[in-house]
Amino acid sequence: MKNLAVLTSGGDAPGMNAAIRAVVRTSFSRGVHAWGVLNGYSGLIEGNFKRLGPRDVGNIIQRGGTILGSARCPEFRTEEGVELAVRRLRGAGIDGLVVIGGNGSQSGANALRRIGFPVIGVASTIDNDLFGSEVTIGVDTALNVALNAIDNLKVTASSHRRALLVEVMGRKCGFLALMAGIAGGAEAIVIPEAEFPPEQLAERIQDAYERGKPHAIVVVAEGAAYNAERLCRYFEEHELLRGFEFRSTVLGYVLRGAAPTCRDRLLATRLGAEAAERMVASESGILVGEEKGAIVTTPLEEVVAGNKPLDSWFLNTADTLAR
Ligand code: F6P
Image (cartoon, rainbow, N blue to C red; front, side):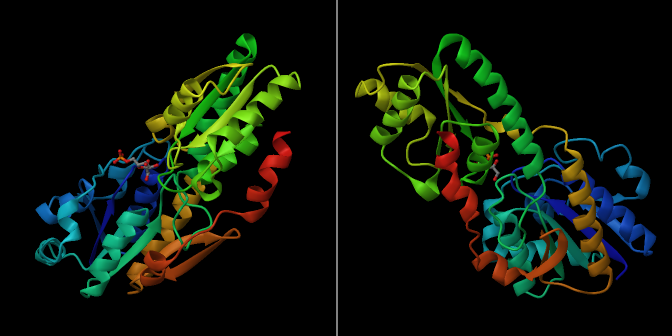
């Protein structure tokens, strides 16, 4: 192994830069040259590579986003796209690739593995829906941003005696909504994994009003059948809420853009360094993640086929805690 490349792909996640830095500096310490691929799999297909030395990744551990850029690349989902990417990598003398990203990115990594190119994944997505890592890079920061917002929203909701529906990202996964809802003391949480009819939600909000609560915070996952906007429209059309006035706030991309927390910087550093060590040792076809505080690896084919359920304790306890 003389040259390895690293890319970030899919939605950016706070901590990606810390992971890039760890990959670059660990390979340097092992006498292997590191290359950055610009703009994810699109850059791979275009052969958009940039040599990265230890100084090129200075002063980035604290920055959100990704210095390499990221993209969603439909062309890489085709056989021709994957083959072209491998030709580009081989043409540049690159012997292995580290892919920092979530589900879509690791499916891409698995496609490279299938056609025999050495690849190692690093678990990174704010959604925390990736099999093979109990927690992924970016989750802790996204949760803390959501919590700050919820705390602020609770203040204004209480001043006006309002119900506020707060929508958080997460694609089809309710992890961010569930955890932010519990840690933020929400009156109700709406997630795709445990849907219930809007009428039932309205009853719960009404009940909070009648018990004298000054506010009701409802955390809604963007992937729920009724997102915040649809819920508000439904409540209005069916005149379901008689007590609180209600409003909605969509947190959206705000969750992705923050500076990484200490937890995310350390996680990203560990996972990035481990991925580089394993690549230098000629390992391939695995995702590097964290389970119960320890670094673990999982074959990429299991990662892409796997399903990561929500923690059942949190799932079952959310309602009790909201009373
Ligand atoms: O996967 C991360 C994520 O932020 C999801 O939570 C969200 O649904 C999606 O990416 C948004 O994607 P895009 O950046 O392509 O709009």
